[in-house]
Length: 415
Image: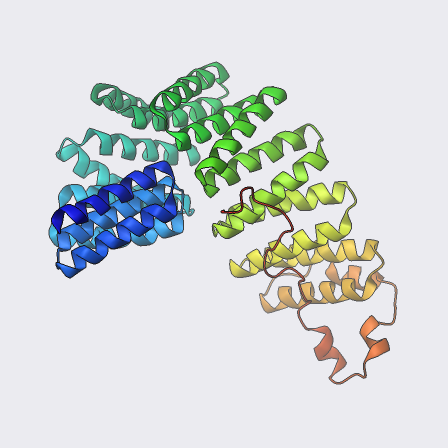
């Protein structure tokens, strides 16, 4: 029984490394079942840590947070220090990727302290890289470089090439932030070489995308496009939706900077769909806003209206009522241009009501509402009025895209 369980565990780990999520899940779930039959708490904790790694490898951060939380509870119950360190790292990383850097920082420091105490260099490198990334993203560039220098030293001393790739990528990003593009390119080139040497497809996709972003920033658009396409192809091959979405987003931005709007649009749309599926509302809202600008520039007003609807839905979910009002007003302005005055009036009225209910000061919506040409509302021509007019005009306008469904293909169909 023991050999069978360990076999399932190893097969699950192997398949997750290869990017085969379904096969990995089958093996790891079977290992959990067998350990539960044996009431082997330590074995269950081991499988949970493997499941955390599997979710990490495919960038499923919602699942990673859930599994890592459970793994951490088991490891604490067992007083397993290294298990606590590993589970804490994956939990901290998932929290970081879900948009809570300061919460992640405390979790990662706990993991780092344990790794240092027990001489776990690989774990220390992982933690130092993520701490450096948080420092970089919060404006502490020099502190980030200092942290990352320590990570490079530890990775070099221990021969941790996988960790070295991650650190070099973040070093490259930090130098790029400081406009030291030569140092950035050197670090990223070394990272790409290592990923190819060790056969890490996920890391290759990320480092190619990062180098592409650098080339976009320096105006080398042809080279950037080629790097992004390679990154996208690699991410599709390993079915990594997070890496795919990031590469698509960067390719879209590269196209947009060159005013290739027809090429940028479908790329941004696919990225938006992926961010929606991955529950990344902040990223979804950012790209949807870009699509509103793009479609407005192209005077494709109907499509711009749809993307406003997506943004309004996300803002409501996030309780960001001032942004709801802004986008209701912007949508109403487009509707006025299209001479859809009844719909425009309803959106302006809803913006006014939203401001009043949330005790915001009224902006320009009342004046804009009064400026709308008086028309007979379409539904008045078809239906008898069955309710109070004032109450009816205070209703929320119907958003035609409450659920994000785009008529596009993600790639191979399995994403």
